[in-house]
Amino acid sequence: MTYLLSLLVLGLVFGLVAVASNPSPYFAALGLVVVAGLGCGILVGHGGAFLSLVLFLIYLGGMLVVFAYSAALVAEPFPESWGDRSVVVYVLGYLVAVGVVGGWFWQGWYEASWGGVEELQSFATVVADTAGVALMYSSGASMLVACAWVLLLTLFVVLELTRGLSRGALRAV
Image (cartoon, rainbow, N blue to C red; front, side, top):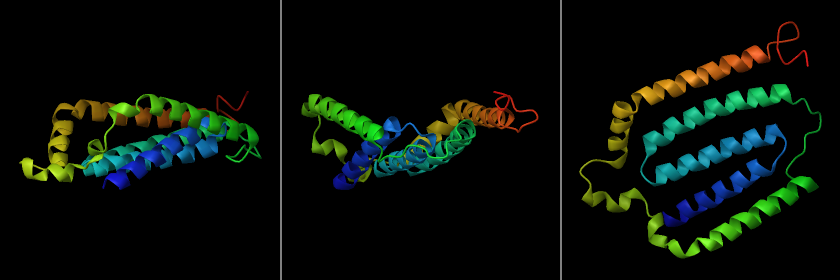
C-alpha cells in the first residue's frame, strides 16, 4: 500500500508540473482532470472512499466549466503541446524547484507516514469514511449547498459570455 500511495503522489506531482508549465488550456484542463483523479486515489488509499467520489464529481464539474470557458476564449489552430521547447524549459524548471523543496523537507518524512487507514482498523469502532461523511453532511451541509450553487452560477456565466455572435459579451472583442 505504501508503494501505491507513493506512486500516486509522484503522479500527482508530475501532473501538477504538467498543469503549471503548459500555456495551452486544452492540455492544462486534461492535466487537471488527471491530477484530480490521482488526488482522489490518494484519498481512497487513506480510507476516504465516499469523500473521494464526491470530490471527483465536483472536480469534474468544475473542470468542465473551466474547459468550456478556456476553449471559448482560445481558438488556437496549433496549441503548444508538452513537447515544445518553451514548455520543456518550464517543466524542467518546475521539477528542479520541486526537487529542491523536497530535498529541503526530506528529513521530516518517514515511510510509516504513508500507511493506509486499514492498518489501524483494529483500533477503530467505525470505518473512517463513515465518520467523515456524517461530519460533512451535518456540519458542512451549508458549505456543500453553497459550493453547488457557485458551480451552477459559474456555468451560467460561462454560457452567457460565450453565447454566440449576436449577444455574447466576448464575441464583440
